[in-house]
Length: 182
Image (cartoon, rainbow, N blue to C red; front, side, top):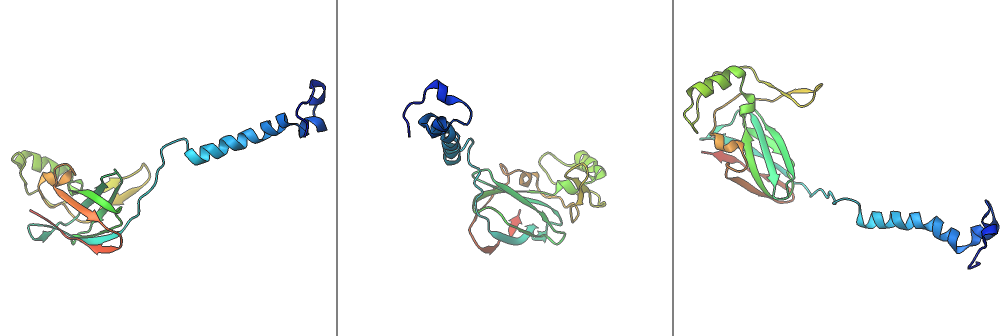
């Protein structure tokens, strides 16, 4: 392979140019750049941790929480949620590791129930609200899903992972965990 090619040899299709080191460098440079990008990446890796299977029941003062959403958020920020069924049961595939947990059943409240709670609840307390039809969760403009169950008053602290005090270390495999709220 020639080390040097004269400018006259750089015409399109010139065999001397095609065999030159300059041409080889031009042809392989994009491949080297792509290989380096593939090795080191352009952005932070989005590795999804393994999951487990977890099921159980959510109770408040010994009675099943009759609907709502159970949320798990790991120490690394991965989150997963599931519905709490009308009988208090749940089933989900949380990420393996330490998780903080929140329970929100206020999403089941109707506007009338929200107004009644606001008018009658002492600060930080729990109030009984009138029963009503199950609300719809609007997850997109075209997709409406009914959350099972009906509103049951539980302490407001359980709505946030920062105040609920609920934690669980998820391990690989199938497990059962009941959450007993007080």
